[in-house]
Image (cartoon, rainbow, N blue to C red; front, side, top):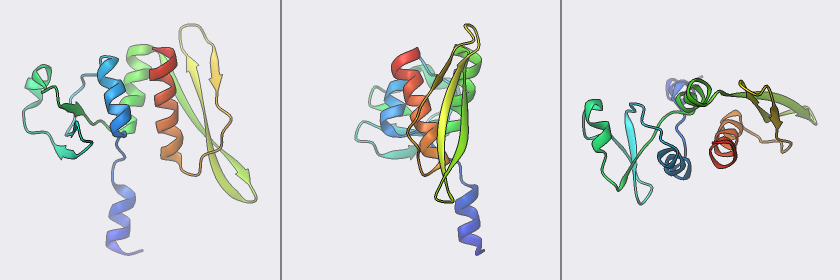
Amino acid sequence: MEKEEALKILCEDYVSFETAKLLREKGFDEPTTKSYYTEGFEAPMKFSHDLLPRIQTDEFLCPTLQMVMKWLREVHNLHINIFVTWKDKIPHYQWSIDNLITQNTTYDTPCLEKYEEACEAAIKYCLENLI
């Protein structure tokens, strides 16, 4: 494996612009190293984490998928499970969400080709339907 390929694999995966907007609506305000602008352009944060409450209205925090999954679990008691299924010897990913208070589980049936797509889909479901 080439060095560039290895670095790409180890890079963090960030939420989409649409999910970043939903997160702001739902009160996500954890420190991040990146932000999106209204146009969906991604850029490093221009200011200290101490200034997070002063975020400009055209900027949206851009957390990693794992940061959001932890926030959902610790703040909203929603645990996201990603599991693999096999179709024609090809892995596909599905998700379920456990509500840690009510002990209810929500399942999703579509099979997605990438783990990160399943994470993003589960996060969006939580933000749009459970919070």
